[in-house]
Image (tube, rainbow, N blue to C red; front, side, top):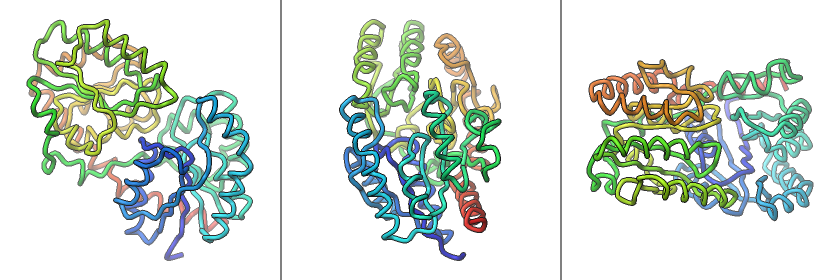
Length: 384
């Protein structure tokens, strides 16, 4: 099959790592004769729509409800569940796609709609922390509907597939991608706002959510600021409406430390991630659970020294002490020690960043991932 039409269904829609992956892969697949049409909820998806349009990816917003912990939205999700499947089914039938890609474990509506329409389903799974009941429901639906499964790291395979009823399914490991030609330190200008702030800069890309472990970044920062008076800490990420309680907790935590508006900066969602990373001296990932953390890959591609918690597939792509530092999750003391080691050794920062850049180009570039997607799509279509 020389030309393949894929519908990528993303029931979340709020722009984050999984959505960035969809955009990057879809862009790269266009060059390989694969046309992707992205479908997402109409509500609260403006940034996603903008990114898709900017990338030249065909997209449609439908009146479907995302799964969330917000009580009103959760109630609507349950109430409209079968209606949303019908909407997706009619859309898929109308456009006559060859393949449907479902993005994320809880996003079963697209899979069920595709099964009803008789279209093969490729299901991308990219987490290692999910409520037991959700994981079991996913396993059952995937067994019924998925023709192939893409997992983004070995820990994801172990968490969902190994020893389960999905083990016999056609599957492949494909990392989350980074475009190393865009995340290139030789062609990126540092963020102007960051440039105006003096001192060494320690940054993270983290949504305000418990799973991102932002409180450990703040605890680390509060320790370091007591020993160094030339540090500035930067956070870029979304404030989620479903995490209002956690946002209040983070504000109180900041207020209880030595961090002030002179040394701690929250930028929210940023448009130019490469420029934000270019302004950094050290990048820190404090996540409690990840699968294939794109923010880490992007920092590596920008040639930054990285300190990251031991989540997802970081050990597949970072050699501890060579191309980055890996510390235990939920351990602000370990984060502090490794960041301090980098602060006191500029030569190590530079060497580690250079090694990280080489790894990103060799193993994590979007072209590598896109080639694997294209081959896997063809394998799935061949067996269906």
